[in-house]
Image (cartoon, rainbow, N blue to C red; front, top):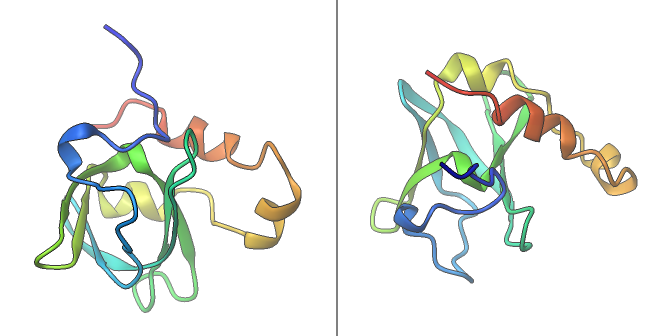
Length: 117
């Protein structure tokens, strides 16, 4: 069994290069968590940044592309394979730290790379 790359979109997720996901709603396995604020298509480090709005006041969370199980273009929703609590407990996305630290994404890889229930 090969290890799944957390930074790559699953083929069955329905992602197509060049699709603008900004503004799409994000659904955890147990309900909505917010809207996509930005996303990266960079090969080997694709991810979404989700503005959680009122759910976790003022927090932005990073979701690696490998957590996405389905993108519904018609409904403008992205479904991820994590619960609200798993996402809430994730490291907070800090754009300033991301810009200056090449190993910044490692903390997310460690967190999201853990087996999930």
